[in-house]
Length: 97
Image 1 (spheres, rainbow, N blue to C red):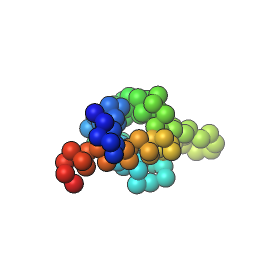
Image 2: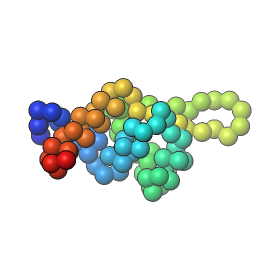
Image 3: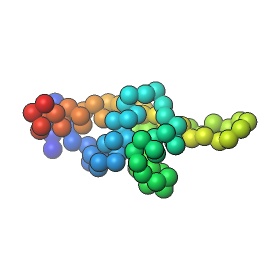
């Protein structure tokens, strides 16, 4: 559905992905566990949602190597930030916000 100001994005629109993008839009990057806990979902569920967002080019998943415990970091790409902003505008139009 194209509203002229923004378009619904079928990749971002599912509730969990919308929450993930919303969370990531407020930070430069987030650690996987922090994002998982904030979203209230399992590791496997978050991994599946992140894979779909990464396939669309909306997130980048960073797994730095080095000493200590390996951590996975997630960030919205520039394209992801733009897609999320466009989707948010479309929702605001529909909701009259």
